[in-house]
Image (cartoon, rainbow, N blue to C red; front, side, top):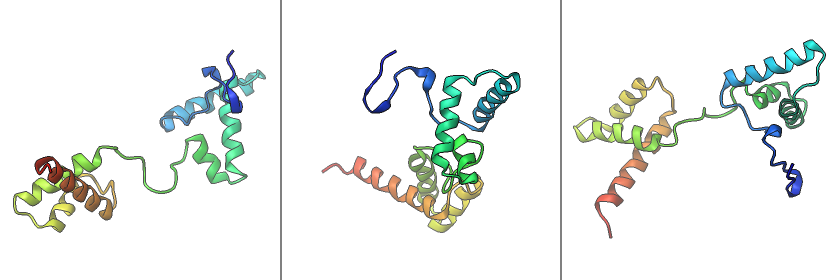
Length: 139
């Protein structure tokens, strides 16, 4: 087993990354529960993940649930990193057909069930417009 400096273990069995979604978090917790029920040792990767969550939660029960991945974190939900392009393009296309900017933002927000805040929709539009301008007006 290779050990790297600063306590990083390259062996993937000790992987402590956050679950990709709530379903994966519950699968991990089910595995922990099954091991405990059988009186068996918890798998090292699960023990490390659970221990990291407990350590970083600092006795805050809500933070523990977030760290385990069974409760959504604070702030905005993880979004599409390309939203500035896809959402911004949609808003700009509506504006380019003559729709007023506020109406275009409202329409796209309704289409996406308000997945983003109004200011995020405006930022996506502005980012798309700026990128479009740079792409079509090279200097």
